Length: 173
Image (cartoon, rainbow, N blue to C red; front, side, top):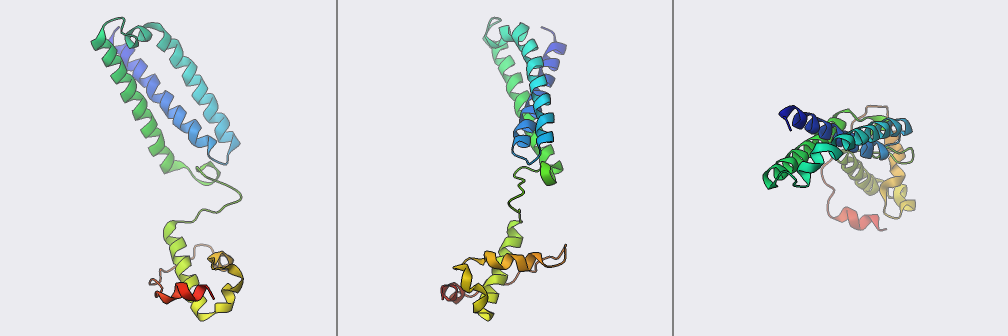
């Protein structure tokens, strides 16, 4: 088999794994349209790769041409598929937004860890200053989250210092 055939096979494998990663991430997003596009892409590439795979490449993978060519075929397969998956994941992390983002849900809001930590520190300070505000929360700060979301869009939370040790004890009042 010539080097052009190997390069074509490697390219197909690369795109095959881009499509597999794409469909996997689309399935985890909140977009049916994205999942539809990803499924068509993934299944189209898969059937095309099978047409090539079940020809001469299969003989290489099964060792018909010897162990060294079999290992070379396995190496090309592994490098091309891993590269495709990693590239697709990297690209997705750079481009996914809104409904297309993995984990998107109409029921739950995503908040960065640093901002959530800042909210918890604000709640801890408020619970010291206004203990009644947390009376109905059973020690959970979720009741004050609407206060944070009533702020103008784009408001950034200024991180506060960590609360003193006794704040945890006062929450249990």
